[in-house]
Length: 301
Length: 114
Image (cartoon, rainbow over all chains, first blue to last red; front, side, top):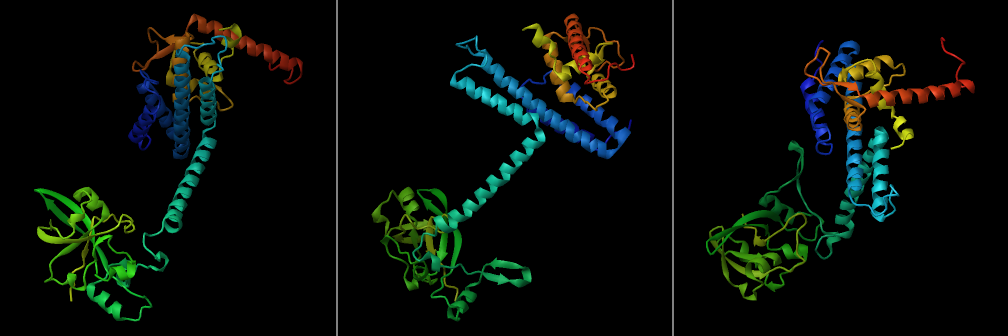
């Protein structure tokens, strides 16, 4: 008898299928069941060819799924029968729990009784629930949970397009940014922003902070200011200037215990001293980015 | 359990017991026998078959054969118990009675080949 293709794979999958039944449902029979299935498949393949084998595989696995369902129904109903029952004369039971179990049993029977129908219903529900989730996620972000900036409907994100590489939302260089600022873009103002991780060290303990580097004109675009301290000065981004940082509200509370005296203090970031000049409000957040701090984007002119 | 409910053997049980009526068989042998004999393409698949075998052994209708008379030692052979034989006969009689009724009401032709 010639072996049918993927015999080992089929055997392995069938074993996985059997493991989905309640524990010990097939105990003592596993080997025999797999053997019988493989032998059936071999016989079908030899006598009627690959398409008949394909059909047998589908029906065989459906049979396994149905039997698994029966074993679960049995397990559930037998588990119920073990419990002391107040009214043994009424096998169906009249208590609330008994009615739930009866409904569950009925549902499982119906679901395992017609597998094709059940599969299509479950598949349809899955697709519909997935689509709802996707649509709601988009609506929630776009309509119901807008950006945490004033006039957010007038804010746009500008990317550089690299047609040679088919890269639509690519980064832009600092000189590009300078060029675009001078150009007639129709934008009221333009600020550059990038994400950067810094290492914060205090008392010999290091923490990785993720943050934003922004041009000093960021508030003219985002219309947000620190609630404590000040925003960056125009000269704060110069390489020779003293390094400054603004803390996110969460960082201020978590690491500095919401100490208002933190403004003016010097902390260690990336092994360099940074002076804390301000703290953002709790509402400040960037979309898709949890920022622990904001630093000035160094001027590369 | 009443006699009535005992004799209402579900179809796979009845088929398995029929397959074992003329001797011991292993699981795959039962599958083959049922498939070859049933004209309407009734098939027993392994999971259902062994699920039924497990329950029928628990119900005392069939039992693992003590000494295998078949050729394959790797497999367990099954045979009818005394009670199984009685139940099978009772179910067959019940079906026979139903057929007789169907004949008398001209649902089926009066006789088939007899």
